[in-house]
Length: 413
Ligand SMILES: [Ca+2]
Ligand SMILES: [Ca+2]
Ligand SMILES: [Ca+2]
Ligand SMILES: [Ca+2]
Image 1 (tube, rainbow, N blue to C red):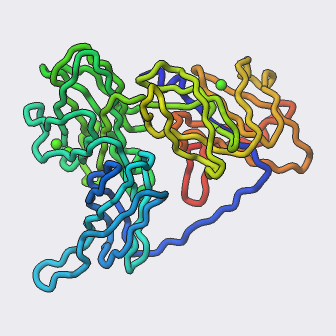
Image 2 (cartoon, rainbow, N blue to C red):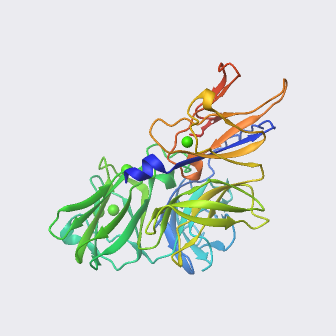
Image 3 (cartoon, protein in one colour):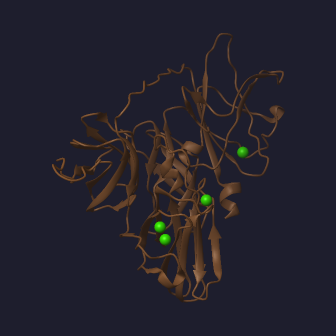
């Protein structure tokens, strides 16, 4: 696992001669705030009915908007208030999501239209394999839910000290990846005060821990493991603090397909063929391939898939730009004096390839020139927490920025 953290941290800096426009949205009350989706994932090529939970009522909900193409949502819950008995608060409704077979897996945003206005953003995870939701009783190995691979396991941390066990069978020499998406799906949920911190363990049939993972993709675990011996194994997932929240939904994708963690360069110019190094699991890594983007692909962070070993990979982020491409030099560039010469504007792709790495670049600017410098790292899935400094020719600091603040929002890049 350490290789993921230390050597595959990629970043991309765009330098543009423009100024940022700031805008803030004013707050209104009583529009529904989406808190969770259960299960949080749905398989492509199918229609799946999922439960959307909100704070404030979704009564009268009429429409579902889903980002991108190939996915539609339809409200299934009848929007009629009961005349007698306890009226439904409509903070829990059913939505049928229809997902085309050819869409890219990954996260889609959705909103619900209601008479009180559009809801806040919800997130739907689209996956390739069958989705299984946790059974009620699964807190011990003896009560483990038996599943067939490949599979997407979905569940929640619905009670204090909740533990969810699943049982699966592997052949000798079988290599599997276990990819959890949970805490990351909460980052864009409005007003989710405390986030889940899942931990994943694989256990043998005798209860010995084979391998465990806590935080690989921020708070979410990831395991790639080759099973030497055939047999039944157990997957255990829980919150590391044993906390509960009915909105803490998780998804664990288990399969043997190639899993990309990083592409280098991360920045890919539009209209050109770019050679990239592919770093990840379940293929000989690093591997080189080329990316040619469609002419109409939008600028900015885009998810894409590659084909490795004739198998479709997981979606991976690239930063599409239309700037002259600069790749970090293989020579020493750790100090101000060793800075790599570039011309601006430019899109620089680099890597924090060893502990304590610093990358320095030098460029000419005239008096009165205005440039913006934007690092894209964490937003595109990198583990880097970047800091950027602009120095003058004597090495004196002109500007420094760690995390950009725009209005009330803070970005880690
Ligand atoms: Ca559970
Ligand atoms: Ca449980
Ligand atoms: Ca964790
Ligand atoms: Ca570097």
